[in-house]
Length: 157
Ligand code: FES
Image (tube, rainbow, N blue to C red):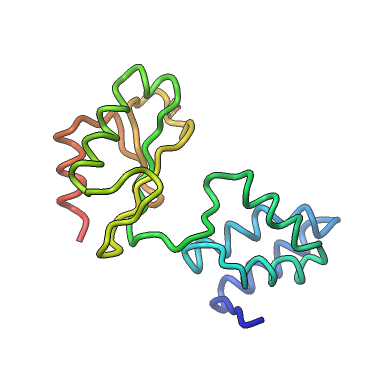
């Protein structure tokens, strides 16, 4: 198994494992640290997380399959998550998704050929009072219009 993390992420995971009375409880935060470090959770990362936390690999796979925000495939430099939940849906999120599909030439769940953008349509981003909203990596945007989306894309190099 060949898998490694940056020194900072490895240290963070050591701290997380120490913080919880049961190692298993650290699984979700550990997977988030891995994703932030590597961009996604590779099969090698799954094995590494299972071994580090003393869990069956299947347990890690179950968690990965359940949480849509955890990725098992490499993502683009910019991950654009558009909320499709009720407040954003009523405020026009489907139009925003459609606009991004046509601007980027990809469907939700896909990455542009140049590896720059991954488009995701997700559940509530916890920013309902700014519907329709989206996130680009860790940055919130909302409410967004098609023009605002164009400006956001233009600002991403
Ligand atoms: S419904 Fe879109 S952020 Fe909550």
